Image 1 (cartoon, helix red, strand yellow):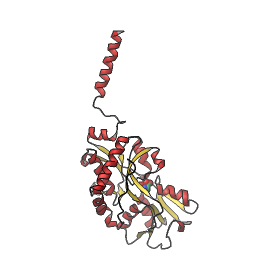
Image 2: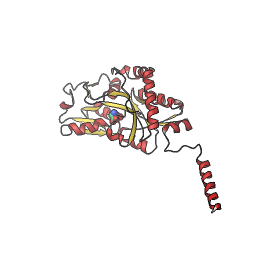
Image 3: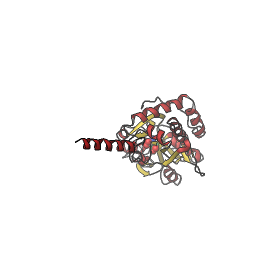
Image 4: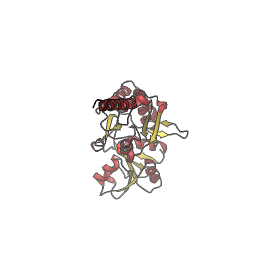
Length: 275
Ligand code: GLU
């Protein structure tokens, strides 16, 4: 009896020694960041002003700055961030599979997504709008899209919104990435692109002589940092970091630098509610 108890105690000690100091995937992102001094963050590679991979392999944009600021506050040097390309449709699975620690990718906070992931934020607010060719003055809002071809991205809230509200009236064409929609628009294969106005402004800045944003937002999109569902410690730490980025001025500086040149008006900072 005594020998058995001793054996159990010894086994418990060995188990504790093996796991001592090691982080597990179930730990908060706060613990994982501190332990490894590294984070894998899901961002877009193709959204000018927000998150863009440059030809020399750097990442620039407001979402990139938010990701770096948050990582810094979690104790991770931005040089130790591994950038992972995520798309509208893969953000939830990138988080649930453990492929990334965080998502900072024009990721609207929605009740549906909150069933699968958690959010900290919002760190920015915008609204869904339409991108059209300058030669289409008759497209003035979603109600003028009857029978026209409208492009959006699979897994995005704008595509869902169009399907729910305008499905009978428009022909929705979906692609995995926004630049595919923009190319199709420039080629005349579709009539309009819909997504958040701040994203569309970045594409107009690349082709101001051909494209424009209609300028009548018809939804509210609140961008949050996505993290694994139920990581309340991580959520609180990231919300605090966002608050600090806003109050310390880095938020405004980044927006002026990255979004300002597109002409998109910089809004007031949002109230951080997911914390
Ligand atoms: N903010 C919207 C969303 O989260 C559209 C932008 C995007 O596709 O990332 O779906």
